[in-house]
Every structure is written in C-alpha cells, then in structure tokens.
Length: 415
Image (cartoon, rainbow, N blue to C red; front, side, top):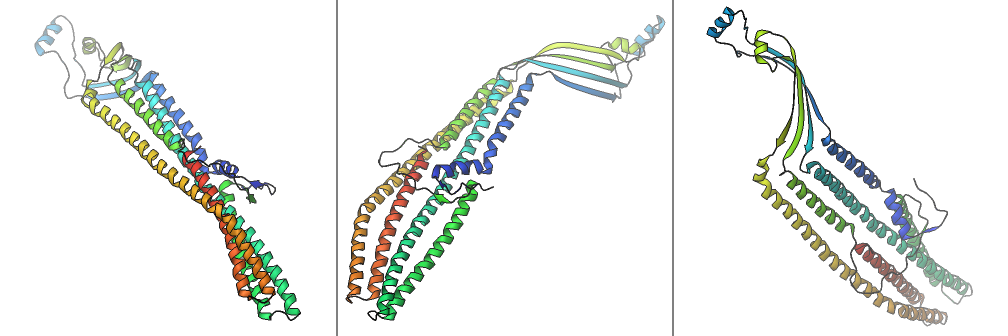
C-alpha cells in the first residue's frame, strides 16, 4: 500500500529505510528465529526419558526342551516338564534416560544456533543490497528533476526570444522565418520536457512501489565525503563470514563430543510368554510380568576412524572462509579506489563548469544583441542558447553523479 506524505520531499535515508521495511524478505528474520528455536527445543528434548512400546508374537520351528531321558526321570518323581511352547507373545515397554552424553546435546544446540546466525547474516546481505537498488532509482530521479528544471528555464528563455521576434516581425524588422524558427525550437524543447516528465513519473512509481510510499519529491543529499583515504569496511558480508567461522568452531566442538562415552540408565518390562524364568515357563504355559533395570555405558570408538579427516574438513572450511574474506576485502578496496577517483574527477570537472557557464551565458547574451542589430542570424542564436543550456546541464550531471559516487562509496563500506 502506498502511503502519501503530503507533498513532503523524501530523503535518501527515508527511502532506504522504507524499502527495507516494505521488502517481503524482512519476514525472513522472524521465520529464521522461530525455526532455530524449534530446532534447539527438539535437541533439548534429548535429555527427556526415551520411551518405546512394543508388541511381539513369534512362532519358532524349535524351542529349548529337556532330553527324553531327563523327562522320564522327572515323570518318575511326579513332575511334568512340558517344555517351551513354539508360539510366544509379549507386550512391553522400554524406558531409557541419558545421564551423561559427553556434551553432545549441548554442542548440537550451539551448532543449531550458529546455523540460525548464518542464515540471518545471509538475509541481512540480501536486505543490504536493497540500498544499492534504491540509490540507482533515487539518483536517477534526482537527475531527471535537474533536467526538467533546466528544460523549464530553456523554454522560458526561448519564449522570451519568441516574443521578441514576434514583435520584430510585426514591426517589419525581422523575417517571419526567424520568428517561426525560434517557435519551432521552443516546441521541440517542450517535447523533450514531455518525455522527461513521463520518465520521471515512471521512475517515481517504481521507487514508490519499492519503498511502499508515494514519492512526490526527492531531496538532494548533502556531500558526505571529500577525502581520499580508504575507509573501514562494515559490510554484512563480513558478518556472514564471521558467523560461518563460529559455526565451524561449534561443529568442531560437537565433533570432539562424539568421542566421549555415554552413560545412561534404562528399565524394561513386558507381559507375555516366554518370561525371564524359563524353568517355570517349561512347567506352566502362562503369561507373566517381567522387568529389568540397569545402567549402560556406550563408547563408540568407530568415530575415531574418521575423526581426523572430519576435523581436517572443518579446517579446510575455515581456510575457504578466510580466503573469501580476503577476496571480498581486496575487491572492496579496488572499488573504493575507483569510486574515490571518480569523485575527484567530478570535483575537477565542476571547478570548470561555473566558468564555462559564465562564458556561455555571455556569448548567448552577445548573440541576442548581435541578432537585434542584424549581425548574426537566428540559427546562430539558437546554437548559443543550446550551448549555454548544455553547459548548465553538464554541471548538474557532474554534481549529481558525484553525489551518487559518494553514496555508492558509503554503500561499499557501510560507513
């Protein structure tokens, strides 16, 4: 939804803030935070008792039984040892509780939180790139405003000369073709004005849609940079690398935790046949309750086989991240140098613009006087008027481009 601001001029900073709030990706921060919380919560539940219920029925082709000789002996003393049945049934429950895990759960939670930090930092990079897009549209709009203002001044100047030639033509001191020539030039400039206005409306709508507000006017930013020293870099891309390094450290600690033994307690119980008392089950084929409690120490030494390689892989990831940091800083340094050189170039150009404009203005006024006395024709006057307008236009372009380079430098360093 576009929010009009009652004709107030928008600043570059206002447009950037509004664009960031309006961009759909802003919701990603909340989604990442909630996802990380859920992941950490699930990992924390590893300390809760683990419960499993089982139901089992089996049919065996053979079971443990007494030899025939011993069964004869038991019969002689009045005991009927039937032996075990081949069909067996049980329904049971197993409960286990981790007592010590070597820090695995704690480090897994840390890894999950670091992954969330990496995702947030990567989202911040995308959000930061919005500023460059706003800069492009904002300074494009500012340059169109400058050209529209110059076009209006040129129309006024041509209109004055048109009125002057109209009077001269009426009094017979100028040819009709001179009057028509100036009028045609004014109409051509009006066409340019129409095109500029159309471009401005289109660009203002694009910027407004991007920022989520109606753009009426834009305010010319102030100069923010005049030096040539390299600036400190505070770009979110560096935050991503820092977050990735913290993740690598967390993964390495989690890897070390897998080397530690795990201690837990457990309880098992079931109701069924065959139970723990096999001799009783041989004599009576009845369902019974059975239970067991105990402690268990597990130490998976198999992780030692790959531990060295896994640790080396994490170190290689760190090296790649540090290389990415060096590449980014190197490219950013080159970008700063180029932007600074452009700023200095525009400064040098602007030192001559005022003098060129002054000279062109004097030549144009002299041409108007000469034309009045019949020394030059109207084409020479139009040529000098356009030359003066081009000089004015070049100054506005140089100033706007210099400001854009300054704010591009601000974007490049985030200062």
